[in-house]
Image (tube, rainbow, N blue to C red; front, side):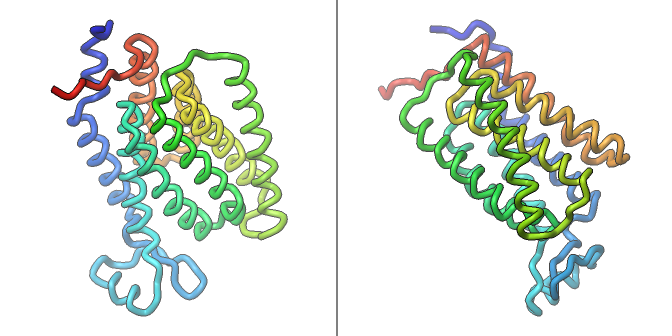
Length: 251
């Protein structure tokens, strides 16, 4: 059956949008000098000149900024592939979860040691479930149970992690981490079951990030989350109006 809104589907599936997103994320990371950040001798060091990075790596430094930049670009590509209902997006998400968890832990989120493994298993489940041919499903009671349960689990793990492993323990930081982790945890699980409203969860998540970065005057990240918000809105309507992607049968 032909899709109801072919222009919308073409935009969501556009490779040009992938390129714009990748260049945008790279530009944001470069502008913020992420590549000049390393983890060396038990501490984060910022502003390392690019031509000195390899020397630090040879001395045992962890190239935190470069791996964060690479992870951010692939995380965006993962999101774009999932928008297109391409299961490779979930597979890339498995890899970026490992990278993001390591980097987040080094940046002071000690609870990452117990929160990211949960995300890893959920994204792995998503890859397996989509591989079985999961179809887009409408909202039901289980969706709301997942959203509520994810937020409850997120706050519990974040505070438990801070209590057990230390790191940053200021209340504001833990609340922000709890909210963002809860939103992403619920969205990832809803994505595994391919709910249309997965993208509502991501819209809320991106709005929270947008407001947070705007208040911090972090304009580079504001631009990044505007792109993510734009993609989430487009994908929400594409999934609702155009439904599942139908693969063409082999000739």
